[in-house]
Length: 262
Image (cartoon, rainbow, N blue to C red; front, top):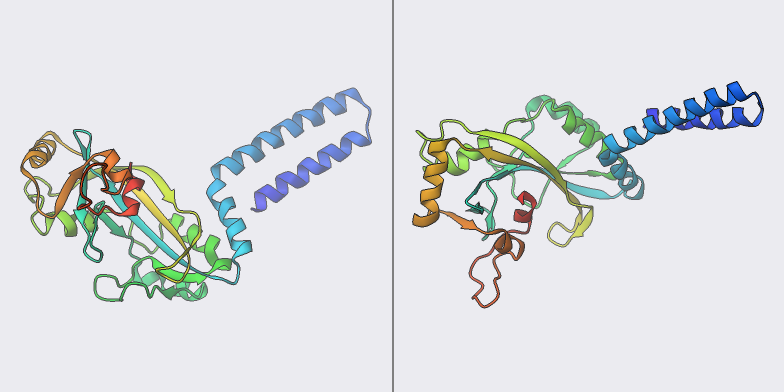
């Protein structure tokens, strides 16, 4: 934000200088400076567009409580189909993944922004230190900058992958002693009022795509034909329709956030 203000100030001063000088050389130099400032300003706005969107939210919802949830979701795609797993807390199928965890070293920062634990889901051994919190809108930008710093928080997606697929032996550990994956995109749901949480909320998810080796891919191809415990393989259309396909009974509930991995 400071850089944007500085660039705008320089742009203003450069434009003002054109009004007080008629020297052609001076004017050409100033015009060159103005062009450079505009390019720098445009680049800065594009690179930081996510933050500037949050600035407006911070201003409009400054004193409102906002529920924040930041998760990571895995895109596991084989033969044009997506793997979804049965949810633990809600009766639906959804992408493998879960909410990021923060560490004890983050306590002072969370006290500084007056963050409260989310009360939509009971706090237990599994949900403790989840990045599901409630905070005032005035602290929203500061919180997201903390998250992007990657300090004092979980930065690896292996924990949820292991707990949901490897530990219960849905995926054999000998084939998945670890998993490689790449970042695809960040999805941010615009702020909205949630009837479930009875508050405004913003949902953020980082989408990772699993990189399969030949043996892992072969195993998953077999499960498309034979089936796989607590999981389903679905097409893009099924995901977008949330399991409600024309001409078929609605027996397959797919979560709304499953579409984020497409």
